[in-house]
Length: 579
Image (cartoon, rainbow, N blue to C red; front, top):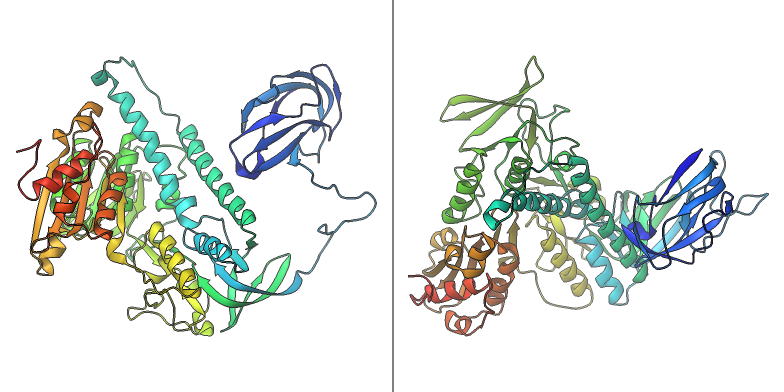
């Protein structure tokens, strides 16, 4: 019987690798376990072994050729032999015949008891935890990282990264649909949802493998399991293989957060979606109602509308993306409505019900008037809750904040137990991956003697709607609330040559400065490349540049970044390309 030979896996969760050391050629007899060739990648090497008994009819790869996961690389005539694996890490030792080797167990076995110690123990391998672990190792500390699920945490596995992978896919779709505007005729375009999701998974897998590689390079011991508190100086981890008691010089808690559910009727419906399920749908729903018009809700609204779903968004507050100034929200609102997304701002979701024909019915209320929305699917996107119940914090001597919705920390991320720090969503300060990462750096640096505190007023935000939004520092609304007199410079992207050439004229760049000192204190960019360009305004704020100093930064032409210069000039009535 003929069979295809395919690359079923690659070293270190890579998605591609290079073929080296080919040992067999077409026509050769092969046995299970025979080495066919070796695959090399940035994460290590792997032997590709036969799991067939028969003849190698064809091998379609050559020395040095790059192959991808799931790629067909040959054909075999013969039988597949159960129990053999087609690939294993190069150099891996086989189990000796006749007796079990270390690490092999038969029947019921007890987990190995072990007492461990590290200068730094980190609980949680998300963007805060793994960054803190690496920083600790770089500083010469012995480090243990404990993660119960997957390295990379929510952000990498079911948050920022997969969402942006989907957003990138629909961005390509949008360009194809607008091809005629650029002089190309594309008769039709189909959507392969399975391939869209596979690409998203490949991106995630590559990055997870990259973090695992960084753990190895930095000699960080990673324990897979759920940590629990024993006392103020000890935590434990118990799995099928390991029963460990771990003492520490310092402990960093980075257990993250989970999706929050509004306590309304139907919130426990097993068919209710969250951001996690929205990242794994095999088919595009015909219609989707999203409860929550914040960052997560609006990003998914644009993604699924682009994929063809009819989308409703229900937002309790009077404005979607309520953290932004009204002018920024206006651009996103206009774009959403233009694309057919129905927005219900100032509406409270009251209940989620199921109709007789299986449709979902969302009851919403505004000014005591009830309205009804029907759709195939309903998603809840109303924020996240700190995982405070994932460990007995009382045993560790760690206090919660006044609102009891996060761990109480000081500017160095130190808790009420001076040996223990908390970072990321667990603190409920700003639930952003880059905040968690910076908090991790601040915590480890403090352990090593630094006195640099966390600065939340320097934190930029990136919102991947269409167009996208970057923001940092104060908004006009915040400045007014704080009684700060400001100068505002605003430049529309429709007056920027690069944005116009790209067919992306929607949006603007806005710079905010304190009126008396003219020091820049805030900025918002709505439009193409906005999430990237906001870094420039962030640097101007961090370095406390005045408008006059910022005027002298020269930007390359033609770029969208020139709009920042124009906004700086506009704040003093001197914009060059807009009047």
